[in-house]
Length: 224
Image (cartoon, rainbow, N blue to C red; front, side, top):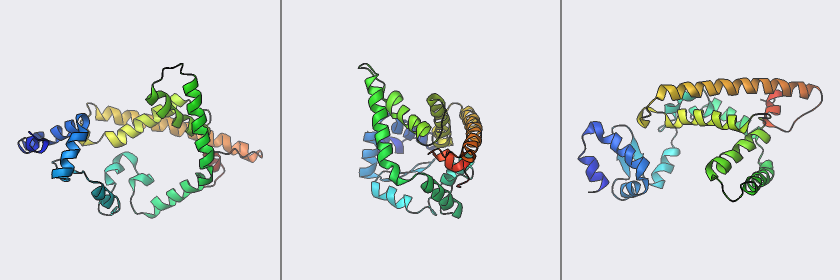
């Protein structure tokens, strides 16, 4: 029996749990059937889009398909806003601090870090934890200005906040959503305290005549 036939025969109260199970455990054949037979798929919890063109059209209509879902977790942060002055102001600040001219240097840094990790792996490596997570953490520490932060702590802050925002919604069926949110809030407090102390240190360095080439140096110097 096809996925859609099983879905249609399932009681309404159990439909979303079944869909979520297929998304987690059998995503490729499930979405292949959706693209072929029901590309705009309405469920009791949400509507799934299975075709590229529909996803693109949705993303181009921010005033219709908004990001309000994230506001309870992200507050007034720019990614929890749509077509607003605050969103574009904060995005402009980000662009001013993350210069595209730095891309070749960042690419070289990423390559060097990956090569060093591979060289030290002695023929055996966990690619996810040692490359795809660790290299971005080193990039944030060394090039985005989180000087002195332990990579493990950067990964912890990132994990809890991304998990809470993007994978801790009512339709995710987590066993302890309140616990996840609490850990994310604790991580935010830790990161805020770290950045406050770092910005103060950078400000002292700038007043003494130094200007570290880092995003937090821009913040400490009052660029935003």
